[in-house]
Image (cartoon, rainbow, N blue to C red):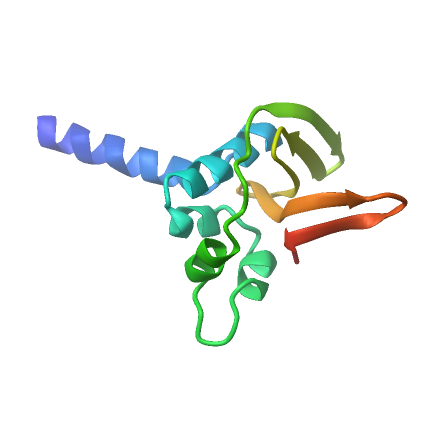
Length: 126
């Protein structure tokens, strides 16, 4: 019984790391927590499919591409704006754009910096 409970808890923890269904802020924090823990594969699982597919270069995995980018630390959430199924989360060290899919909030862009009146310039985007 104890072993079955341990396996169940591990499975739920693993599933919980992939996509956040609660809020875009929590999804952004989890994405940066995975990067800080050098768990780029887990961070890739939090990206929107189109973003994850576009990220790697030739012969490179998504995790390798994220590792190479070395996105800065996320830090504390400073603001969250949600409009419909899209959101912007500003952290102390990053700005991310997310979309709410049927399975939860996923990262569409990260490593974003404002460019005045122009659109944000993002290291990771779709």
